[in-house]
Image 1 (tube, one colour):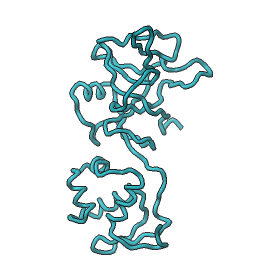
Image 2: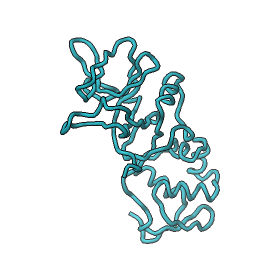
Image 3: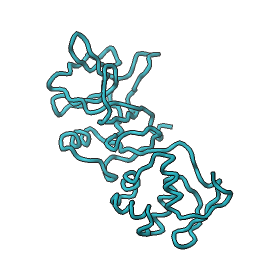
Length: 222
């Protein structure tokens, strides 16, 4: 698809890789803390960002070691173009932050969260990571799946939830829990994986916050 060494407008090459990897203008705006309008101007050649932004965008979409020539042109070797699996980032939030976003209907920004954690899982812009606390979701030995204390779960408030899905929910407004949603005898319950813990009735005091779509251990564990 590419010559050994190629020359073209930096934003044209960046846009071609963005399309391959599912990266949007919104993703760039969030990543570099600028407006979507600014990104749109950059990526259509209407305005030229600083060399720092150009280098950052090229690196983000998978272009390594580019040489910026002039008039927005770059030269890059085919070997320096990474066309691998796209990577997305979501904020790691505390319980207090999660409840604030839910009750105040706020949007996440780069300044929010303890840190932003990458994942190959594509989720909505409202998705967030949460570190599991306690042992209610630790399955008995040999059981699977299991979510021990300290593991990270990726929660997407915009995913639809059905019977048997894992989710996070608020109880009586100020309590927060991670369980499996089950339907039993016409009632909804939040079910733990650890049999030492009891089911929680999901009644009028229960609000589903989002569906758990992925789990992984933090990088600093290893």
